[in-house]
Length: 457
Ligand code: ARG
Image 1: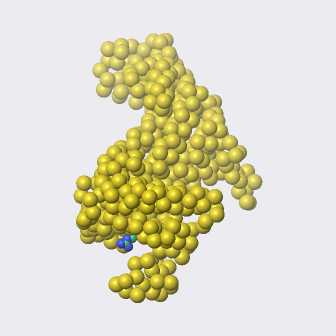
Image 2 (image 1 turned 135 degrees about the vertical axis):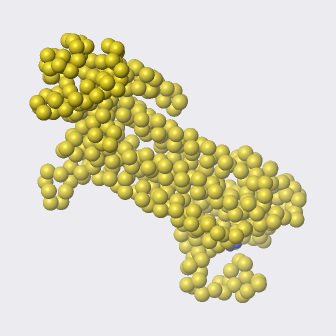
Image 3 (image 1 turned 135 degrees about the horizontal axis):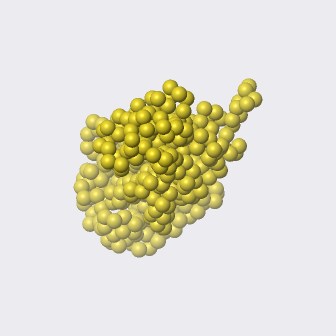
């Protein structure tokens, strides 16, 4: 069958060329946006007197019928069509006759596809934000549960200073909040309408782009028609936002993998979010966390793929740009799945406070507090630091920890030591004296929790 664009050529193409050229397999998911965009376009054409009101009604009804038939399954997408835009227009013309051929007045597929993609991704941003909010709230609830549970805080994966598990979890809540903020920012820049840019240069008809944009919920219009049809910044921005979300999830995943190992055993994942081995009966594997960590690779690939596709494309529309969709759709699908699975995994994860505490007690994690103890008693910090380091070395030699190092041994290092040193190196007091804003003491974690819950409202 000859193509809708037959004219300049006979429109008869090889099957292999059709298959190669077609984007329906992946752009059919934008059917709703395409139809809603066309309804707004028909309304604009009528408002500007380019078609009659009666014609607009016929078009709108026809489009509404296609939408409901697609949703009910009465109509299915023809996978041999060139793309979703051609498919909808073709079915419309079959159903309503020649009026259908008027719909494409004062627009082009170039601004149409740019419109559909913005509308579609706007919806995706909303649903990713909802999922992020849910995860943030799950993480915050967990943090509350463990706001006083002491664990080692690490630098270089070496035990550094004691923190609470609640404080550690709230660090992730902060990352997720920034992710939401970043997406809202992208959504704001994305929410301008390209429709009416037409093929590249605008149109000779006296259209009302702002009317059409407003009907579709945009905040404004793309101010330059060449830019309107060739801008894909919003897709690249969204992909980089998603890449950052995935990076956060992957850091979280890595910690969950470590924490659930026998070497740490800080947490126990629910059976519902782990798998077994086909050969080793003892295994309980954190597959969900590993898969999330792994999927970051494909999402970074999606971002690099799009950036590379866009690089060096001259203005305005070029067919290269059809390659924009699969990467951004894949990233949206992936991050949504990861966020859902993460929610369940964290919700059902249980900490093992005894093990966390044991690990916190074994690594001289309170050595900074020992130095601070001497500083409070008047010693300069550098001197106190050096003495504390020597005491740690002595403890290691004797197989002791700061809590069990005898007072007379302490006194050999400085006369400033007395019985109160044991209170200073006690883990609970180490944590609860860290009262600076954003610090790890229980009251500070409670403040963080309250703040985040407030922001989530
Ligand atoms: N399927 C095309 C895409 O995804 C639609 C735009 C086609 N425009 C054109 N001039 N061939 O980009």
